[in-house]
Amino acid sequence: MSKNKDDFDDKFFNKLLIVMTLSSFIGFTFLSFYARKKEKSPDRLGRKECFLVQKNLSEKADKFDKDFKTKLIVTSNKSWVKLIEKDYIKAQPVDPQCSKSDHYRRDQMSNVFCLYHGSFKGYSNDYSEAILGKADCKNK
Image (cartoon, rainbow, N blue to C red; front, top):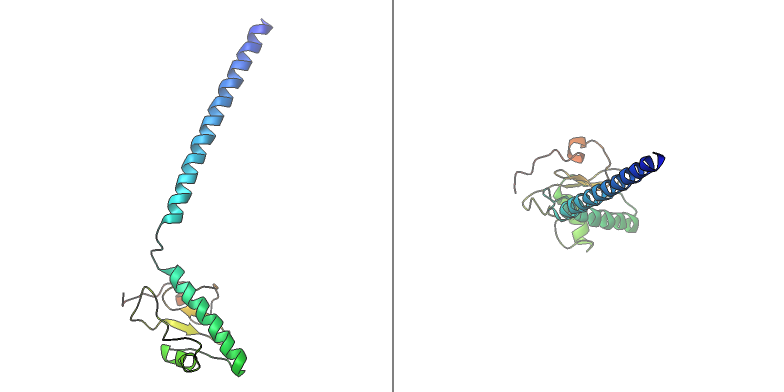
């Protein structure tokens, strides 16, 4: 009788092992498919391009501050003219998703941010709704 019980345990264990292997394989397949699909999904809000512009502006403004021993505070697009005049940037910064907009700012703490997409660094300041990306781009 013990032999039959051992056979039953072995068969049960083998079946359990097969079921676990198949379920983990199926789970891995679905997870990898989902991850690839998510990677290839478009950036609907245009944050990647906007954050690249912000990073570039931040680097150029920091260099300007260092060269001229000043603190550039930007409250409108017209304030970026100083960087254009000194050849730090070539033209007025434009939000890739809001081409007719005036969205880029730089505060007293040297944080560059977009009123539409928020900050690429994630800092919050007086424009907290903009940092969270709640502002609306009306000039798409």
